[in-house]
Length: 56
Image (spheres, rainbow, N blue to C red):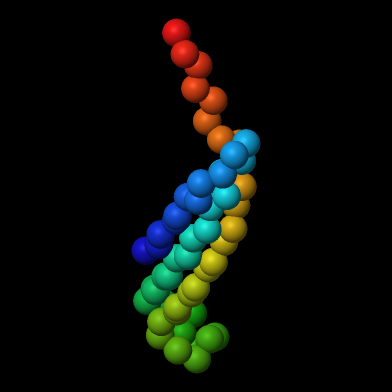
């Protein structure tokens, strides 16, 4: 589950986001990691070119 937010910009559109994850681990992996579930957090930043609109 996550969310991304586009910010207003000129030539480029910056965006920021974050995501959370949770997963159950199989028994053979549980023995290696010492627990039966995994949890993760990701945060990201990005930049992409803004859309170019042409008038007819």
